[in-house]
Amino acid sequence: MMEGLESESGLFDEDLEQARQVALSYLAARDHSVRQVRDKLAEKKVRAELVDTVIEGLVEERILDDTAFARRWVQTRQHSRPSGARRFTDELGRKGIDAEVVEQVLAEFVDVGTEETAFQLLSSQAQRYRGMEEMRAKRRMYGLLARRGFDSDTASRAVDQAWAELVRGP
Image 1 (tube, rainbow, N blue to C red):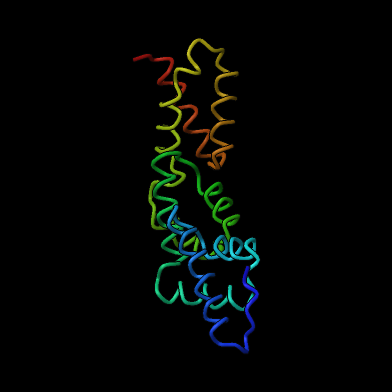
Image 2 (cartoon, rainbow, N blue to C red):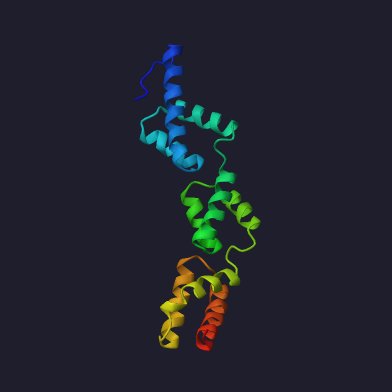
């Protein structure tokens, strides 16, 4: 796709603009991390020096910003699919977000991985556990919270609280 010769400035500039347009159209669909955009450009067989130049330009223009991306991603996910810090850390890491950035962003969200968030999640799923034997229901609740990245102490307390509410009834 981007086979222009660097010595011919016009072709390099043309290739650079094509690469930039590929990145911008990728970002137009939804937000992405720097690594995701870098991977997309590599997938489109954009030359490495062009990829670096495009990424640098988009970062300078604040079109690409991993911290802002992580913040928006956590906010959206916490609303639509509440999880614990461990899960968010893993998922953002797979998207190429630096561990320090993830830690900083998660610290901004007071409700990530809390007992209250875990309890609310279990409460929203209460119908699944009605009529079930206690140990089986608790095991399943705990499994749900573990898969969502809640730590074991938080999960245990939330499961006990959710079970007590379930037994008490509406």
